[in-house]
Length: 77
Image (cartoon, rainbow, N blue to C red; front, side):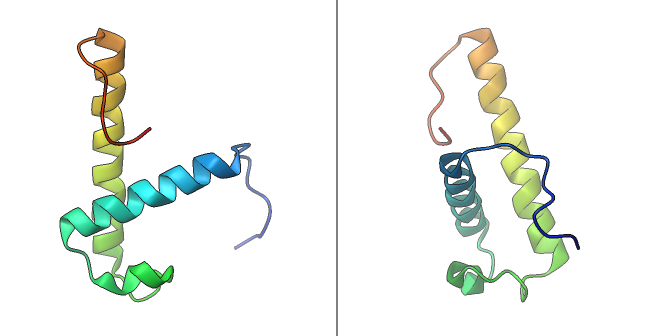
């Protein structure tokens, strides 16, 4: 895998917020706590996919709430 070729131009705060969000979702799903060390190599692809899938679902729900103006979303900021 190439290093340093990311096309994403996000600030460090964005990466930090997404990582925190990822750890919150993993904790809620009861994923193997080895991820807390920062190393995800011992976590199965299925578990990583579940974390990513739940993150996307929650972000979509929050975006829909904002678009509809129903309520101020809580959680991911």
